[in-house]
Image (cartoon, rainbow, N blue to C red):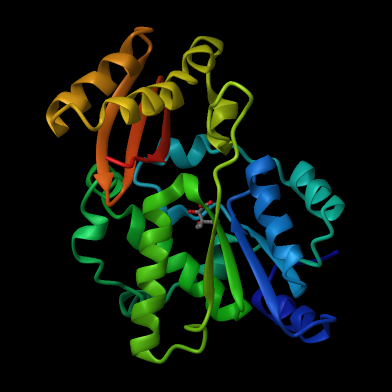
Length: 274
Ligand code: PAF
């Protein structure tokens, strides 16, 4: 496994890679089985598997959240090596964001309503930050396919829209196919997330209520109005007294939820047929 810390090193490493087709798994590290499922999906497609580890400051609107985000680089490297990843890109913040305000301005996207609702409404600027870093990484890696988890349902929609707009702009990376992989869950139903490591024992014990409430909501979706359904799901989430629902909303067929568990924000989603 080759590790590149600069753009130049990455480009050199990619030149020497055994296969020209690149399968890309962008991450912020603190890897878990969810990330590994993306790597395994990437490996099945046979190209050179490239992973990135970069805690992207521009997608955090809360400085404490950025400061506390779990960082486990050595463990991450060992996991990626075991999974047979060929190239890991692990840049510094300066490497990704050299001081060049004009270029940053060009790298803005118009997502309309898509980045104003749900995560976008409660984390202003978050999706611009995601698009900013993912477009920079795509430009460097030039992936044939890039892999994202369905847990971040709205993020996947944003990235698909970004790639659509990149096609109109004639970007070199605009043919990247976005592959959405199923959410991986703990045995008790909690969606795997790097943030789960930050939960207190009381919040961790209550956190499976998120998936449980989504499932119960699915059973009631046909008979309750959207408002009643939201109230019902909130009551199920908040029954332990330690979780607080931030929003419960629909994006097409998908019911999406965000929950505050102490200092930790958790999201999840589920397809509803009604
Ligand atoms: O989903 C994530 O881990 C991040 O948002 C991503 C896509 C790696 C961009 O920083």
